Length: 217
Image (cartoon, rainbow, N blue to C red):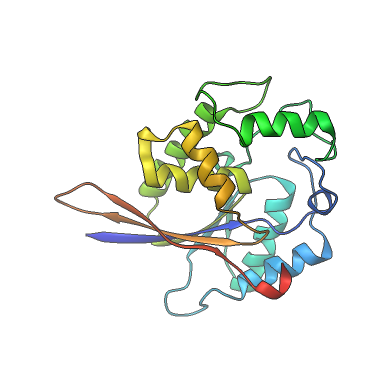
């Protein structure tokens, strides 16, 4: 039996987060976001049991977060498109979150019960994200490292942990329900474990959710 620890970290606050603007790949950290990333980095052990690698989404905000953590922990960073955020519908990217049209779209795809294959326009839908979450878990299984930091994004992180809980049985309605009731703050950390058993099904566990320095919320 062998166990891995995976530290999923959401990126720090961005300028667009602070303005409630819906983002694409762009978006640099605010001063507060950089402080959040550093505070999260300082929560990791630096000696016994320390992480061995950082794997990050290549988006601007995750790269910047990963670089701050990597500098603090003296760790190399690799990048993977498996960790990018859900592609938003083009109609909302760059728009204020409280615009009536934007709220209507978000309510439809993120806050309501709907069929798994619902697609509003050109976004990644639930089915797309579920497939990518499955690929990420397979990717983690194949890594030789036992302690991995993964810097990612809010919506995709929630999809990954939802898939850990329900696997192929996960539905869009279950995911939206879990997502709504389990917020993850900027620079918040979800600690998960993967245990490979020789004689029974491999096991994923969510050990800690949304761990962060409360003073920087």
